[in-house]
Image (cartoon, rainbow, N blue to C red; front, side, top):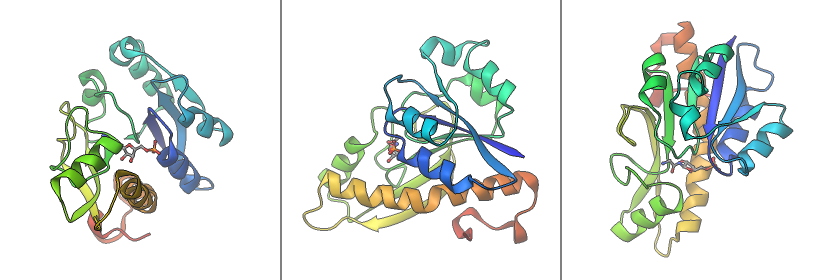
Length: 204
Ligand code: GAR
């Protein structure tokens, strides 16, 4: 059994979508949702789906007997940041090399970095006059949004597009692709992905 741990800070629609995607999968399961905000709706979504929610603060994220100790007890195989807004500390990244991934709601390296999350990203895309936006799933390192890219897909930014309408398109792309990319990554850990499928050509 491969175990996914999700980190989220806000609404948690991606977290919910990932949890549901792996319901009934005998080889892969979401075992916990870690959250830095006790009032985040992500915790409620996890609770409704029977996934334990774990709330932590900044000190617990960086201390040896805090979040990293709990991850070890859970036996996490992949840490998935789904709308998680704090930087992952070295203590966790060093213990899970290549096994912490993030989703960003734009085509990195454009429109990433500290403070670039959610609506702010979509506002920046529209302000820049970009004709395309999209999603980027990438490995996490100690710099915001700079780890190696695993998967990207794009959508058009149409005339009259608003941050809200773009957010709707981006969420649809995230929900359509993020779980399947996670599955391919975990199957690769198993060594069971057929033909060594590149992530950008994964099949659902
Ligand atoms: C998602 O669009 C995700 O890409 C973004 O936050 C949203 C969370 O939505 N993440 C970032 O901006 C990280 N820089 P959700 O809470 O509904 O899953």
